[in-house]
Amino acid sequence: MRMESIRVKHEQRDVDERELRGDSSDDETAKKGGIRSASIICLVAGVALLPFARMLPMMLVSTGLLSTGIIGLIFGPRLLPNSRSIILKRENHVLAIAAKHQGILTPTRLALEARMTIDEARRELNKLVKAGACRTNVIEEDGRIEYEFPDFRERRKAD
Image (tube, rainbow, N blue to C red; front, side, top):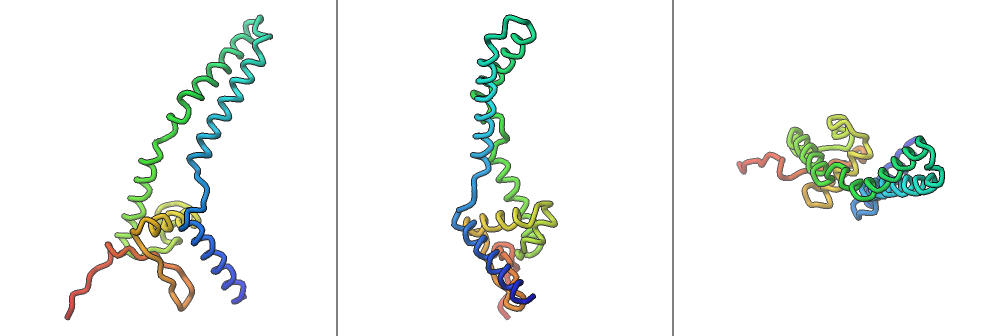
């Protein structure tokens, strides 16, 4: 049981290190690619139905597919929510939670308070490590990883 726990922690640290290096996939690019693919499919389907457009229902379907495809290609990626504003809102939310806890966060605590999965919380914290906003500390007693935000730590007065 103890060896399994150690193996899982080492695997998680490897994942965290990959995320810190930026090896994770880009969701925004995938969404834009999905919109483009769907738009192209609509265009192709609309063109394929053109020979049958002599009948009114098929003409409407063909025209609808063609216009959906064209509008999707031109405006689709712009209709996605502004990723910068989403990133800023999420980052500010994480920072507010860190400040609430005197600059010490764990992925589990962040996941609970920000209503995200533990993996999402870990990714968000690793982005902030990469940006220099916090650093990781390994707690030797149990191997837990804490994220420390020095800006939110209380400074102790020298006695």
